[in-house]
Length: 496
Image 1: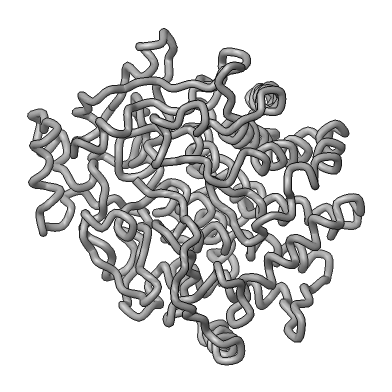
Image 2: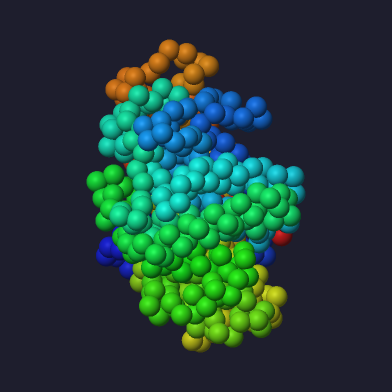
């Protein structure tokens, strides 16, 4: 189970600006020769392998079967469906909602580049939003987790065999969770844009539910890890606070509804909710950089001078991650990979690269650049930097290894993932119980089920990678690594 990156002290391995930028230019000129459309197809297919609930007739990942069909029965609700977040069998609402928001943003900004894969990307969003509608069906209640993480992590079981506790955890007026509720509102609002022309009635349902959930998050303020600490920590603890999710939810509701109340909320609460904090963080727990980049599009289009301070924050974010002049919390490996301290580093690589690409697009349309002291960050430079990260993931790295399973000639074979590492139900119809799976976990053999499209946590700061299940921080895939990568691959499949 991948966890949030916690800021720790690492030795200062930075790349000096000039050599790295020269290398970046050479990389752009030479080209990488990657099949970005193939990688896009696989990055979306991955989500089908993460599905929970009753699988549809058009399910393409055939080693998976129906699972967790009674989720919610303990509380008298239908909480089936949704996604397992990573290599375990828990449905964590916080990262699932963030995954949904980023998948939607990928489609909103880059769906026109997805070609025939667009329909599969939209299906991936709907599998999540159908579940998010279930968990928010009762007003002023959000079910934020299904499954007991401690009992689940004590077993190595296929989701189809699960006999661990499927407890359902909720937030409500007495037990607030503005963070996960705010992110859920953002996800529903962003997805409403995806479905606006495709399914107007469903889009309206999503937007109305987003507004209701946001109002609940704002009225009952607090972090869900305060209300549900024993269930959600240390797995998806809210380390950063709930304020950024309230702004994030309001920004997406502003974008989706164009209602003045959300614009006014953002302007009014910019300082109160710390919009300028930790500008170079973006992930399931910290939305600051995403808030600033998303709002800046309107400033750059000349439509919202009242948001100018958010654009300054976005510019500062860009400068903080440029190689050589980067912030101490953002480093680069010798091979050129963005690195932030803590586990599952690829979540930072894909999320930050997505913001680089999105912002470069907004800047390009406005014919603007970002001044960073003596350096100028042009839209082309930001695209090159994002592309360099994508190419590193796909195999242009010191080990010559693709970190996307099933892409390229060499990729991780022993990923930390229960369903992938255990024989499929078709191959082994008999139940594999809790501790019976341990021998598969400890086996040196490759996983029997190739989880095509899964992107793992990735190498450490020296570009070293142990292809081994017990090293979960490096070898576990997550939905929120893939979600922003979908947008990146879509763009580069059309602009290689």
